[in-house]
Length: 380
Image (cartoon, rainbow, N blue to C red):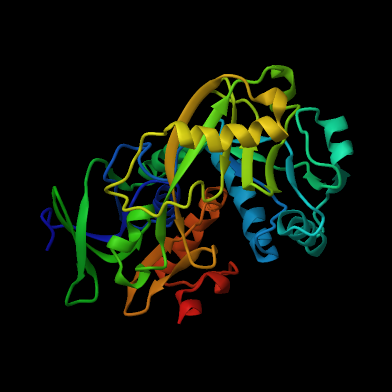
């Protein structure tokens, strides 16, 4: 038995975006839940920080994500109302690029397929409406009014507190060292503070997941990511009511960004920043001059009035799957273990609904959510 002689219904490893939501949804189903987090709650060492995270209904990655994002919106709104915290902000969203680029074309397809209200703007029309943008002639932008951003730290705290109120036990600064299957088909989880047993296990440890599940080796690969905040020279153009969140495909790569919020600067990043695969326990967490150059040169070209002095730089991690779609499944040889991995830089907006899905899979009830495209078997 565990060091406490207590057997839980479920143990959740990682109490970040996905894990805090899973702990909450399990606890509200009257499951006896233990959440284990190696750092603080919340923290800045993984993938669930950065002050703002984009949320959008138009989904260029694949139209199949749209039903999930619809449910995620409902759950975020409910969490905000129940917690009294400011979690979701609607600014509108822009997905832009050349007319035949997947960012614009895929967003348009998802809106048409799911009847999402939207507008298509030329680069000139975009600048007329939102003067902070300066996109090349001939580019197209899809505007969707419900897009915006989620505050990740507030979301994690709200989910964690709601889980605790529903009876969950949460331990921070507790490093999971491994797990084994018990003779009765449960799990025993070893930590640096002792061991615990449960009927089921949820692995939501972000970049560390592949170290806890052999089935994820090579399928959930951590990558170093850098974010920047530049002080606008025309601040009025980059406020939440004048500057929608955005995804932009240009010859320099695919970038994303936000209006000014909480930090005196326009935030932006580049997907697959410098293509640096890393070990999450041994990597350079300090942004450097080259990191800043990559982001500043882009911003000066496409958002010239948003790119004054540097207000901040920060690192985080993506965990990429081979096809950049999520991995949400039970382990083939261990059906009592559910994994949430490989969110590939676009997962946090879904954390609220992914927590619900993980609770479905963990309790063995099955899920009504469309997750076939996220199964591990697609890599066989």
